[in-house]
Image (cartoon, rainbow, N blue to C red):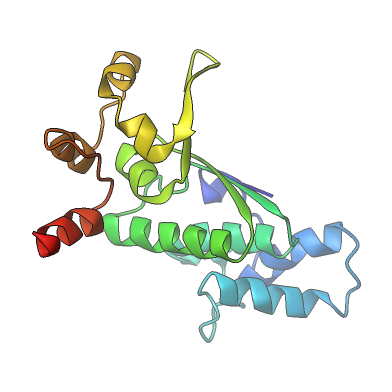
Length: 187
């Protein structure tokens, strides 16, 4: 399933539930199974609050519209989810929420492919990074290994995030604030 960069380019139905139901209906899921798929998908993305299912999707916040777009794909029960810039237009709190959702989906067994220009998001949430330049693979490795090579990334216009950049001076490439805090607790 593919989640667009801008949910406003993906959403078209008059209500959230109609939006989420479109995919399963289009795939021929029996009509008596569709409401359960909608309920499960909305619950999975945290939009199972009262009144949301009947709301106009365009009356929701950008973060919630992004979640509607994810739910509409989840309702089709794909094994692979492709997110094109899932954090675009979101504030820090919404980014954390969206990335937490993506992490939960991955832990639930979905393969996640994410396109992002936010290096700190890649550092913190990706297990593997594939860096492209002019349509060719410039790097493909575990995230820690990719960010341990700033000399390879910077000529591509990619700046290693602060935490990995800082910790490399001490002989390790840490990716997250939690890893950095753990080092200070040990010391």
